[in-house]
Image 1 (cartoon, rainbow, N blue to C red):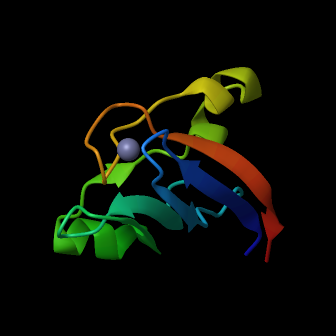
Image 2 (tube, rainbow, N blue to C red):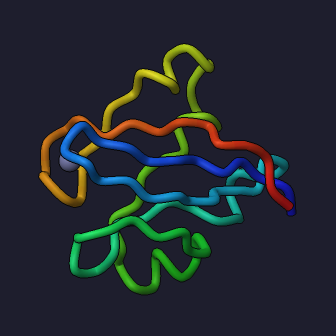
Length: 93
Ligand SMILES: [Zn+2]
């Protein structure tokens, strides 16, 4: 299942790599979610995220035009500011 590796980065120093997918069917695949303790990001199965009640982040590269995806800001799990962004780090499969 090919997808995009995203490098989450925040000016506070937080960084984490996530692997959302699949690009073919965005309704069933891997999603970006906050860890239950809120301190980091994880990549989990969409169903698992729902079962565990995890707060998920929509993959900006799947939902927005490229220029907007690069500038989209999200709540950082480390400093809690809405200043975390995702850098496309390459394809994986
Ligand atoms: Zn931060």
